[in-house]
Image (tube, rainbow, N blue to C red):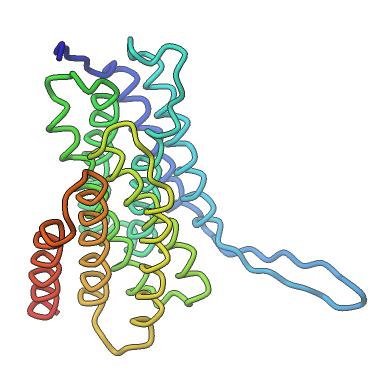
Length: 271
């Protein structure tokens, strides 16, 4: 295979990262974040409350996808190609980073640590997505590991943040379904090449939200909650990848089952 090496344009990378971080910073400057929307239907007043900071986090996630597309347009091998597959991890990164930055008190040391770490993580994700465009890139293995590890780490952070915030199950279920689906879909795609396994990812996501719903009302710590959900996600994704590669079930199940036991054991010990 012919090897090559491409690096993202530093100016575009800097502008994109700074824009996303600026959106997070502006959200903390809002004096009032809660707004009410009410309207009358058949003589009854229906009232909705929404948090503007949450809206900004969602918009920042969409902005990240748009910026990723803009960054990839400078790649020599992306001319005339779609960039949708490269949006998932950056969008999830912005979304997950926005949740703890929203929950942490502004102006504290931990908020600034999270803000700085978020900037570094965004740069790594943007770089990795740029590199994996070409499977012959000399940095492709490193970029693939970065994206895979980042995806599972973000899933864990999201689970911890939602558990810590005591999010209602009606909002928890769609959040976990989307996160589980995109993490498994992108991981399988990176491992298997150009193949998209939507059915496997949807099945893993359905199992994930059932586990999330079952654990929701148990009196367990956020760490145990997150780890208990992370372990089956990793195990099922790894098992699906091995089976799709043609590996026999008995052999394919060894590594996922081992990791499932180890991660669950770590969760019980840490929690």
